[in-house]
Image 1 (cartoon, rainbow, N blue to C red):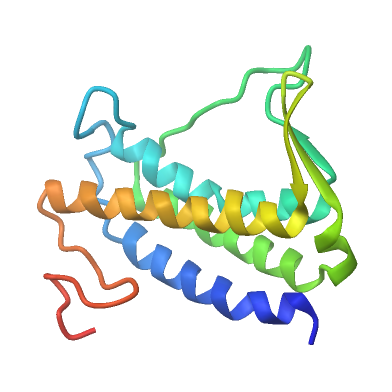
Image 2 (image 1 turned 60 degrees about the vertical axis):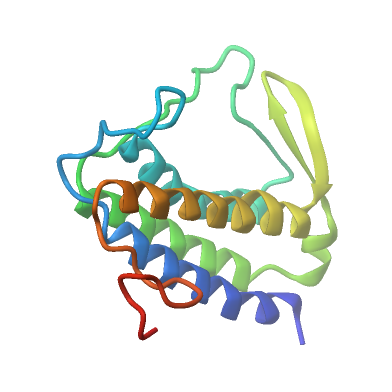
Length: 169
């Protein structure tokens, strides 16, 4: 069985759980953050919506420079509405799923370089980049978002099991 066929069920499960959490992000709270050093709620939710696009980068490119020399600095958007966050997430998740599904096993084994301003920061197999930089990273930030939701009084949805707000998962 091709590796992509093993990855897609997990991808689908994680994207469905992520969407359930993003659906709870309240409009009008984009600037809220739990601590001065924390991301705002809007930036965190937008980052989570952006992360599936990194799966496309990981399996279709051999490198990515987030600040190419002479290029523009990266923009860190914070979308203001739940509808826009979900639209971005749904689009990125669909593109990522399609890219993963059509990736051959040999491609997952190829090296992928992450660069900043022309300097290589990390080189790993594309499979590792997908699992670590995309999927694990997304799950990490989704967990942060559930804490933000709890702190502002929004019911936290079940993700991999029940929550105090959804005990009958």
